[in-house]
Length: 225
Image (cartoon, rainbow, N blue to C red; front, side, top):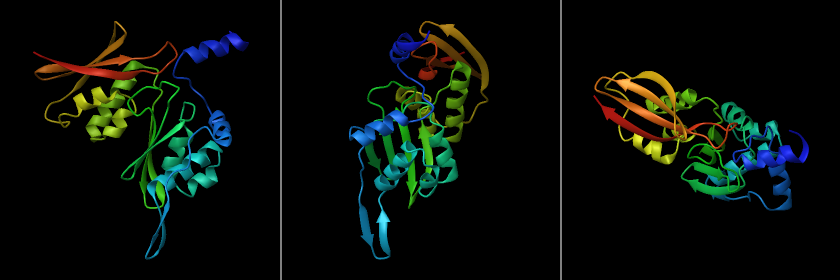
């Protein structure tokens, strides 16, 4: 399918994958996308950038595809993660909670509870970037969430799962019993992925918007032997 028909199908798919944020850059230049936020606070030892200012500086460098400018305000790992973001750029800055700053989508549906990009700021640099993931295999989505739980990292879990699923899983800490991945099987609306353990099993219910879209874990439930 080519031309206008292909464009229409992709637009209807929901979570569209883009290799570069050129469209968001055009919106920024037009004054309709993410707006700068944050101020510079004067301290006893000079100006100290607020987390929102650092995050927005990195975000705008990414929109310009300027890795050098991005590297000035972020660690190499953070830059690599951000520049590998698989979706079009988020179109709204959602503020900062402490040193955690969010950029979210308002017109595109993406997997997981992050709904975009979360930057962790430490001093003058972004040290960690979390982002909505594009995982096209259900068992990989389930294993990614399980790995986040094992690491005790809720933000990582939200990259691939709904807030509801993360809340259910993180009610308890990982440990205590051995978990064995049993694979995934089709169910209505998606696939059900299972982990067995002594005394029961955990089921992760994965979903996706369309055939070409990524999977995410929508909900989790348990059964006892």
